Length: 170
Length: 219
Image 1 (cartoon, rainbow over the protein chains, first blue to last red):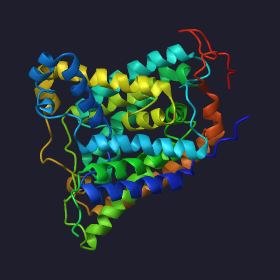
Image 2 (tube, each protein chain N blue to C red):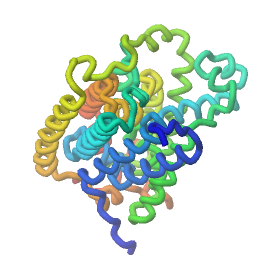
Image 3 (cartoon, helix red, strand yellow):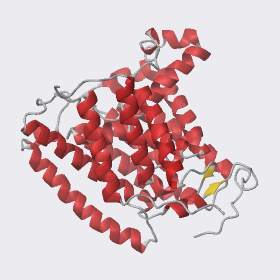
Image 4 (cartoon, each protein chain N blue to C red):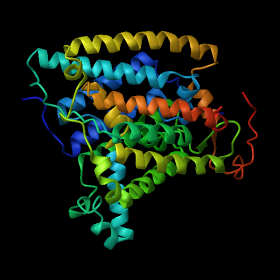
């Protein structure tokens, strides 16, 4: 038997810690935390490998490919996120390799929905020029109107979608 | 030392990212069941933790400015896009309820061992590439931004920033109380043990073929 995992942090502690990390990031870098920018750069880099002619001629990916698209603060940040998440999961006994899914669907279906959800999120993040971290969290912390408009769209669509997606999770 | 330091080097990114990932994992945001529990009202951690973080960071930025430690408007403020901000946010919300993550939390899910998070990340690379493929056709609509750039709520409402922060804190407090009531009634919030039980191990004996139900009991 494995030792039971340590409980998640209380929301007030986690939220306060997240706010302080975000504040520190603003003071160090001049901007907030992000995530989707890395995946856009990874997409540009991947396209540059698989379809170099198309990618360099593409008006969105082309500018990224003038240099190494992955050589950017956001890439180091995501490497840090993975290392930090791994450290936290290992230290707390919450690391668990496998597929996490709701009780009414199987692992294969879960992966198919994960892929589709990822495609929508990848497209949406380019449209919004950021994601839940970059616009929703960091933008709102600067009191940007964009942050709150983003969150209205995010929560609105999430609640709308949950009417159809209950079977996936509950 | 002047603030912000505008340090965008390797160590700055690694440090900010490490702390970000460590906190998100501690919050339980590596688990798609906990994350999506927000939209079934069974786990209000996303609302509680995001709102708390926004208020703490906004208050900190305000305090640093008031004390003269940070020049006004020295940090990046995203611009409101005419269509992109809301539509993009909605696509992310919809993708989140189907896929179980947003970009940052998928990195934490992957770090916690979740294979579904890796597949989600591959999906994001495909989605970003689809955007690039249609970019020329939607460029005008996608990039249309509201002037002035970097518009903030205090500017829009013509009230001091601290009043906006206090208003947000009031909304967060009321939402927090409501959320705690609702989530307890619905059997939440999800604990670490409960979400780990919904992870199928890598050996494959628990994996079900596409479309078939899992052997786990319904809640």
